[in-house]
Every structure is written in structure tokens, then in C-alpha cells.
Image (tube, rainbow, N blue to C red; front, side, top):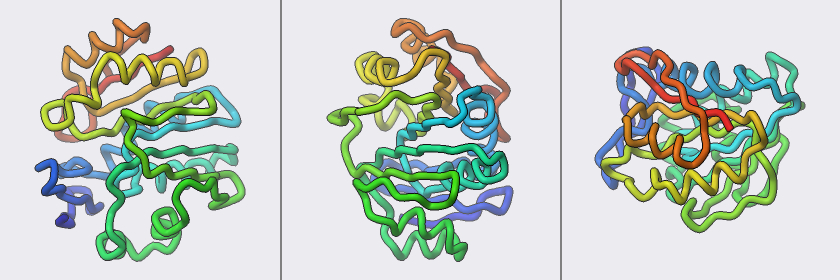
Amino acid sequence: MLVKTTDDGSKTVYSQRFGEHYGSTFGAAGESKTVFIDAGYTASKADPVSVLEIGFGTGLNAYLTLREAERMQRPTYYESVELYPLEESIVRELSDDELFRKLHFIPWEQPTKISPNFVLHKRNVDLLRATFTRKFDVVYFDAFSPSVQPEMWSRELFAELFAAMNSQALLTTYCAKGEVRRTLQRVGFVTERLPGPPGKREMLRAVK
């Protein structure tokens, strides 16, 4: 694992296991805000809101959602699935912000109240074997790309996520590949292409 500073000053991690960065090198924070916060979290009309994140990764999506939840005073339940948690040394290299680190260091498998409006439930489990006990209003689909994790972009997996979402729930992803869009449509989602973050022309949002 190698920590890299991206073009907007935020940091990401290069995974030697998958040969990809966790976030965009053009700006990890910018990508997270555009794809997941603006197009997903703040676009949802649910209040309170429940969020499912596929890939906790560096914790950046959770951290920015936490900050937005407190800004909006919006009660938020945030569940995140991650099979390969970062080592503590990498987390400390990513940020010295204590709240950011707290997201990583709280126990797994245990919903924890981080702030007045934000509960985090981290699950160290393989998404392909995961089951969900609640319905979600927003899904952040932030797996590694289809070229290195094709099993994460299957029709079967998207169908399971569709079943775990409330009516009018939103799924957002940085990936705008035509096959991914068509797979989402086959499952039952209504999809739209949106302008992407720096370095990407487009992204996808899907509505149940």
C-alpha cells in the first residue's frame, strides 16, 4: 500500500493487490464529493437517510458524509462493506484529523454513534456473501474497476442491491461504462449519465 497526494491536495492509496488507486489521482476529495456526496447523499430526499457504501477504502466517503450530515443536521445511518481494511500505519499517514481516524479505529461489526447525526456500521465481509437487514436510501458503489474486480459489477450483485434499496433510492458510481449502465437497467434501475469529477467526463447515477 502506497499513500499518494492527489491533485486537489487530498490523499489516496495505491493498492498493489489490485493495481489501482482507491480514489482519483486528479483529486480524491473532489471525486468523492462529486460522485457520492453531491449526486447521492445531498440529492436524496430521505430524512433521516440510510447509506450503504460498497468499499470503505480510505474512509474518505464516510468522512465527507459525516461532515455533510452535521452541516445539514440530518440523521444518517451509514453502513460500509470492506473486505480488506487498511492497516493502522496507512490510516495515520492519510490524515492527522482525529475524527477521520476515529472512523477507522472504531470496532467492526458494531454500529457506533460518531456524532449527533451520524451512526457508522463497518462490516468486514465479502460483499458477494453479504446479506442486509435493512433498506437503504443511497448506495455509494465504490468498488475497484470492472477490469480488476469484474465479479463486483455483475447483474446478480446489482439485483441484490436493488432489493436492498427503498423506492426512489439512488445508486451512484464513478464508472460510466456502457456495460455497467446496461446491467443496471436490466436489473430495473433508471440510469442517467452525469458530468464526472476532474479527470472523468461522465459518471452514473441509477434510481430505483
